[in-house]
Length: 114
Length: 119
Image (cartoon, rainbow over all chains, first blue to last red; front, side, top):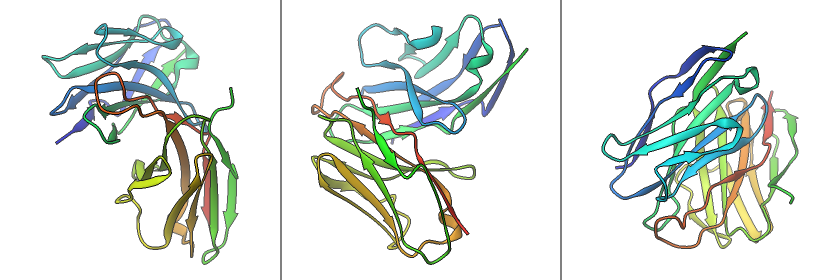
């Protein structure tokens, strides 16, 4: 069975401090992994994706994520949070075996304090 | 490039009325997805199409919901009759699927959503 677990429903950081949003996945096959961001009253926007090339993936707005197969993790990080990063973040798994199964995590709400 | 276009952006209707949500996917994409988002249940996949054919509609809540994709550039999600519990934001997403294999599954591109309120 395939699943995605975002380990924190809420994360609060101060502006200028590092961000860590955690994601673990379970998949019988090599998946593609994505992080999406959703700002209030907006659609979901792709931050970055892993599709079996480099394990450290760089995305937009200074975010990056590292694929660790041994830990089945795909945590999202950013060295320095900005107020505009406050949003909901979704970790997503998509199978590569054919078909279209796409599994979303429950989301992590990021709060950034001034 | 135009992204995924959804209409209407907001809809307020009364219980029992028919609601039709529309989606225009990105040109050239061959997969289309309908999602529903609520505070209580998060993001739920309702149905997805590949090459205009419904592949999995197991997420459709009940017979009141139906979705069609008559051609590659248009899809509708219809609720008839609508109920207050259908109030949610409905998202359409499209993707380019190039077959099985690592790196061939494209990401989803989402529209801005249609916020439905059923009174």
